[in-house]
Amino acid sequence: MQRLLPVLSTYLGHSDLEGTKVYLSMTPELLQQASLRFARYAGGGQNA
Image (tube, rainbow, N blue to C red):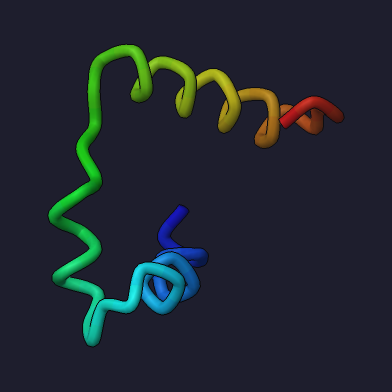
């Protein structure tokens, strides 16, 4: 996500990343999904 933040910022027409970061928030559900995806990635899984 962090890697694509500049693209999202440009798409939304923001002049800097701080304006875009306001719209991003982490929920327990999203954190759990991110953790599962990272575990699959780190373990060499194909469905990361």
